Image (cartoon, rainbow, N blue to C red):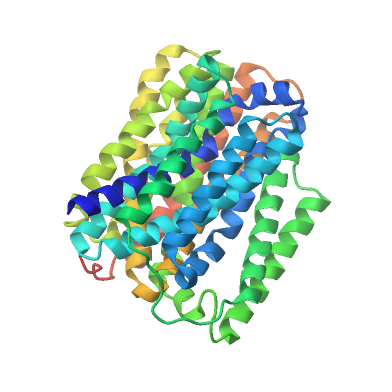
Length: 460
């Protein structure tokens, strides 16, 4: 890489890491935030859900807009929104003010993440360099979720939960100043009108789907959850019809019908949904069952972070020897397989060592799966549609992250019921929840391997 490429890579990867960390940085601090600002126990989940709704619901739209108006322009605008929203969140004195900040943070993530990824794929056109850049990007995206939990625990215990917001500001300002100097503007060569009906339908459809799933996870299946899920199905069905009849479609149906795009984005839901659920329930296990601190819970997650970093470093070399389609199915299978040893976890702290060891291996394969998915998703379309492809890939990640915890939490709640539970009862619920998540990954990994194994390797 040239010096300019290295500088571009550093600033774009730093932004990706920060965006991923923002999702989980407040998770371990929710009780402190609730006490400080007067959130009720039932409303605390909206601190995370509000962010997830906006991040997942708007990513594809912003990715496509970046194709038209310029990906660097969308990136810097998103960073500016992030800086302002982080300041608002850091000085928040009421639930409404904090939720407004989280909404803006989610919109900033929806703008910055696909733009940064598209800038990477257009800046590194040589296959080996692109694979390396995508590998490092996957490290930042995936490890950001686990490191965000560690960082949140540290900031809350040592300083204040408000620093989970303030820490974003200098990074955002630095990115705004540096990116124009080291990253060239990138946009689609062929300009066409923006598909506003498609944008509205996909955004509202995903909003409804994520809200319905979150509602099921928090309160069980009720009329509101059912109505949201039905509305999501209708809106997404209409979106498909509109895309098949629109010349300048937001997501051309011919792209959606590509096996690489379809199966790759399906895999992303399980890769990222399963990993975030594992992080969430590991935190519950360490704090509620073992009785350790939030900082200790964050430190236990270091095994996941280290596994992801190592896999991101060696992953591009593995991809030079193993076709991405093969590696995707095998990695997802092994990710789920190494989640299942947690079923034998007990209330004895001595079990932490094997837990960290198996989660390290789990994280390694979650990263190779994520890297394979990203290579497939961005190598299957031409440069004019990179914003759309990266937006779709990022959206799949965000949707997986947004629905993983509530879906598996619904299984957890079904086991433990409502009301006060003992540590033993909670441990039983954690076992069941992780078992379901791991088995789903194993099954989907085998299916992907069976469907895609006869495909030839992608170029590079």
